[in-house]
Length: 169
Length: 235
Image (cartoon, rainbow over all chains, first blue to last red; front, side, top):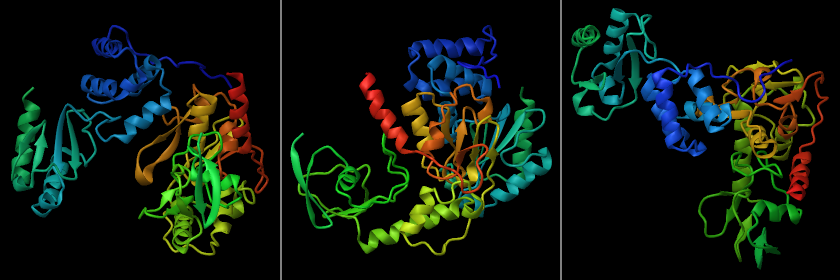
């Protein structure tokens, strides 16, 4: 058995601007191991999610064991190991939204775009997520598309709005 | 360290301050159930088997993480504690897939011993039967998540004693699992030193050496505490 003892290479390109940004951020924090969460935040902002090579890179630079980095990433719901898509549609399934028809909204999106909650479309354009409650019960049923809240929406409106967002770029 | 007096189950005991209730009990031969405690590792109070009642404190506290104070009235043998200990052990058995009859650690397992100690004859809770992996990728050792009780003794021994940090804990709640590196096979770990301390630290048959038959596993968890003492001499 042969193992890559010491740090495994992350395989990231040093010329990638996102890697440069991440390295600058780590340097600013003096490569302190306890700055891990801040660094992960920066990485997720740069990449949209946390790819495995990035986690390896952070683990190498901060001298934190890979298992500890992975523990932290999987503990907090904010961090994601999978791409969430270029655009995100977050459907609130809290009690008020659920009673007002959150399930119908999810069904409408699933029917139109072929993705279930937690999935990303094949072209990586749209990701569908659910939240327990976004704290906007007065706007039920509420959906957040790319950080923009859609209040008291229905399936037809929602699908139209998503198409609008997808075509905007 | 100033000497203080505590009362455990009515017995008057003189001890130095700054030690935990568990340490005092051990020094005075007062039996106390433990699972996540291992001498040499930092205590985390995770298994909740070393619960104690303290006069003036409404809730039960874990003996391994509570320090003694002067004139503390401690009870370790009340019906309330025994009831909770039994519930805890039942939940341990219901949480994963523990089958003593086919386990390498049968007869040499701390969870099994805890079961005998609380008089476990049946389990009142529905079994969860979670889907768990068995990682046999390491050349010498096996990690069987079915038998893991999440005491994190392997994680702590790897981080605090060996200093390698191969093990970690991922996810939350029911989904927690012990992981090697990035939830990758143990055999491909870039951090594991193959030292085998986690094998000895594991209280159940979750981590065991290959080529051991059912009921044939022998572990030496005391080795960890001795190793920590010896390493102190080096410093």
